[in-house]
Image (cartoon, rainbow over all chains, first blue to last red; front, side):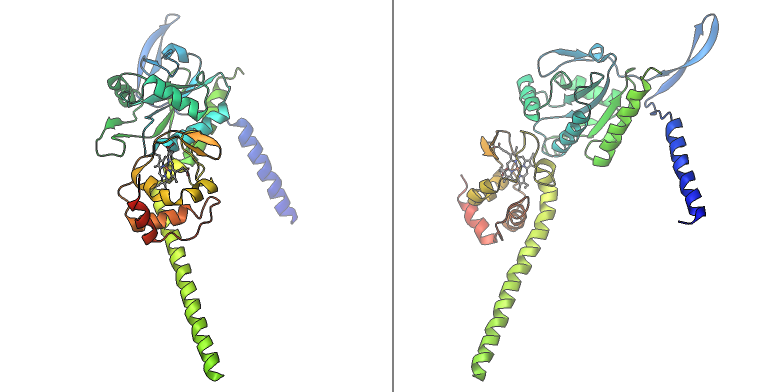
Length: 216
Length: 137
């Protein structure tokens, strides 16, 4: 290495360090937003109201009610699936399992898998599925709810489309997205659950999101 | 003597041609089979045939695949919803049918499956597949 090269090398290392330590990386906030005016201490300020996940209430694989309040102070990853799905669901579950393994036991992190086929996926079916997947029902909820409600939640709240299509394998098409939701119930990321690279990104982003809540 | 060596040479050439033909066929089946596996099976059984937890069995149980060689075409075509033991682990989920696959596809696919993931069973011929399919339960 020449002297010049050495200098360059050292400078590069420095640059990397500086950029890393000073990066206060934040995830974007998805969804609609509106500016609202409110009074704070007699002064009018403009605040932004972000779209949040509307209230919901479902039963999990242990027949326990899971609703918005169950997720207070948690970040979570949500997806839509059904147990008899022959196409992309097994891949999604394999990828989700990878994310789960990374955050297993972290009390700030939950996983929500909504079935979109409640006719077949009864609570015992979901329980069996979750047991066979080998996951803890206190951290990964398999949620059973009325079909209409789940479809609406998928469409309006999560922007991911899930609608019936008799022609598709398994009878139901759905987007295959993993949605990352923060502690304020805002969507902070959407990732293709069949794509290993995007799921790696999700794992990184979850760490970034958790860091946002670290008290400085 | 000249005749003898000539005959020997001809036989040798024929033999190599034969062996090569088998080999070429095997390679073609294996390659096409890999593609068929990717589109029809990989979602569930995985790129490395490792399955999914206790839901979907791996394709790495070489003795199961050897013992059930004559059943494989039926399993793939009509699906399976039994309780089966793979690598000592019990599975009782459901595998859907693949009635879109014709015997030549099955031959290629199973040539790939039974020679990957640690398996080494050699070529599956179309005639073997057709035989097996006649005896599906």
